[in-house]
Length: 217
Image (tube, rainbow, N blue to C red):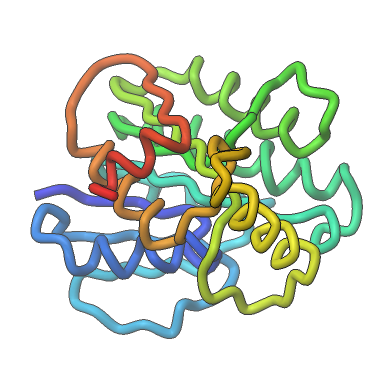
């Protein structure tokens, strides 16, 4: 039986991940750390309402077996590149570093298809930077999940994203841009759990096609 730690539990994939972890026989404790409550009650769930700027106040609680990080935002939500970098790179990296120092052995990290620390695109560059930074941490096992555009029940309306997903569906029908085809939040969550349970050492990256395979799709 494992203890899971979830960072980013109020986001699209994070919510799906928590639901699946609570229903999974292999996990008997699910710890979430977020600014807002999930409004869930479950005997396995240990919810911690925190401020990411005050990590020193709660980092001792980052104990368990698997750290799942699904944290991320958009520049529109964040308000600036500096604010997005803080949420997409600084906070998750600092949490991962604290968890590793507390003896957590496995990291399951959600990034993006095309993540590359050398990319000219800001979003792909910061996702690549997060991968690079976390890959240097002393976890026994690191799984990096790189999905394409995410679909699912978002609380916020993202007109541009809906248009891009519609265009991708159209292109995918002709075998074009399949490396970036949309993927459901529940599929990504299942892939993250399955990857974490296949034990190995070192860093493993899972591109979109492999994410689908991990989820049995």
